Amino acid sequence: MIVAMSIKNTGTWVGGAAPWRDLPQLPTIVVYLVGVVPAIWWFWLGAIDRLGADPMRELEHALGLWALRFLIFTLAVTPLRQLVGVNLLRYRRALGLSAFYYAVMHLTTYLVLDQGLDFDAIWADILKRPYITMGMTCFIVLLPLAATSSNLAIRRLGRKAWQRLHRFVYLAAILAALHFLMSVKSWSIEPVTYALIVAILLGYRLARSLMWGQSQGKLKRMSLRPS
Image (cartoon, rainbow, N blue to C red):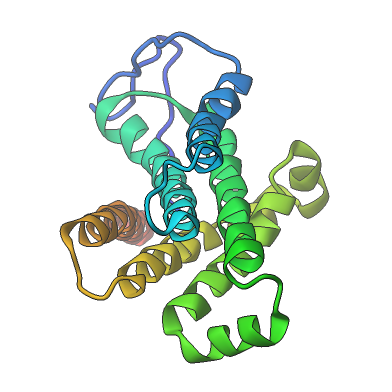
């Protein structure tokens, strides 16, 4: 877990990092309203028969891609704050829940339109196709995260336990990227690009965590030295 640096009352980072930029404080409902626009657009295209020769596959792909995008937006909040000084922390929950809602729509399209709720075929697909296995596992990981994305859940679980649970968003992002990579016959630029973005965001967190651990260890050793 990346520990956030403390902030002065002036709104600048302690330790010489980028200052926080004063952005318009929009209500979080705006994120949900803007976030649902792509879904409305794609369902509208389906309703007017504008999704090409395989509309179900096109719709399924678009919804899954937006789920991955919102996961990436969620993961990008911390680096943006630490590196650029843009504070979007108040919108992170809305971004994460938007990712989950798109994952629900993506899965529903697969279950209903693709498989026609044929659960024998669905189970066989899960066992036979690794990318389906990855996708289902990713959705299972997202379920408890979405269910506990509230202030009430934080109070009931305790902040530390809640934070440990929500670190599984990193696993969800990895599974989502692998699901996309494995769902295509050849690794085209699009899935590879998304996988690289996820790798960079998670690699940044890992590097910060290691640096923090090293600095804390050095401070501890210095404090134990005899004066």
